[in-house]
Length: 127
Length: 340
Image 1 (cartoon, rainbow over the protein chains, first blue to last red):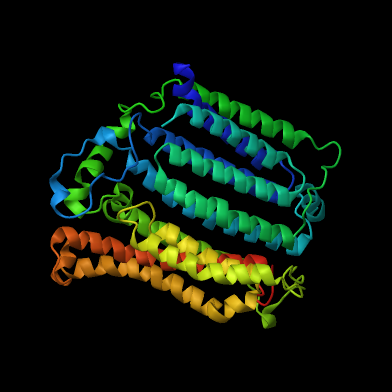
Image 2 (cartoon, each protein chain N blue to C red):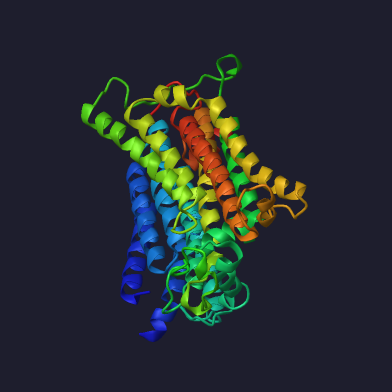
């Protein structure tokens, strides 16, 4: 059981990455490819957040940190989850909505021109 | 960290991912993907990444789902069956996915165990952030202080990336009447001629509270989960709610395209401007502690806290404007007159 708990998050992130990559490569519909890209992104985010987790640790907001006289209280780093991957992933999520918007805009432009979002039909029209 | 919750939510996440990929109806796929994002958000709360969870709830589950629904209405809803004899992509895709999975699995053997406090990622840089954030910046939320202060450059360029993404969407989709080179399809609309009093009333009552909450999220990000990104997305979502329950004109009359681009610009400018002010006062770019020279009654430590608030406001303005711009263009085929 211990071994499974220690590895489970990583297995799932690999599985999600595989699902995302498969959807990006193999799916015929462009929207499905975009969904695959989003799943791939969340898999990477899951990986980073899993790295940041610590057993017995709480959220990275320093307890009793309000007010000015508490600034010199002793803070143990092991009590708090690692904030650095959180920051990187937080901005990555917001950027992912930007890339999602651009990807969907391109899909819409393709639909304007070819009147379909199926990859094989677009290829037929291109030939 | 409770491993029972962790394991069961992770299993559900994989099920949702499979379902999103496999389902034939794109609207269902969008909704299942929203559920997937909410499960992810639950997972991250459980792992202690509350700020990430907050962002995922507002961005991944909220705005992304809406964008997918908008595009489903403007294009086609069903996935057509692939023509016979074109299985090469499927087989190659499966092969590539399996090979990547095996490589990652081989690398995974050397990872530190999940939740190991002694993992290398948690030993070198991050203890400094955790132990010094209060003394350095008077901000108890370490995520905010790292985001806006210690790694301010990173966040500034992320904001610029979002602004650029908004410009790219406008450049791809936006068509003004005189410059139409091809016949544009009429945008599909579900709100026109269909006035549901209950939905309109509830949304109208909800919007001010959403915006007030968004302002709270921006202003209180120093002490609780939240900050400029989350607050900005919630502000944008309040306008999207209006656009869906009424029509696009109501939103464009308040947040016209010009206003949106201007606000995006202003947001990034506020961020970079605070950096330049620090530069002019004789410190490094984005070193807020020097701001105590111009802010009344603050020491260098509180000046860093106030500087962070300033840049969070800039981020919120930029993100709000860009989220609205992306939605308006996607839901109206770039015409901005009527849409979903």
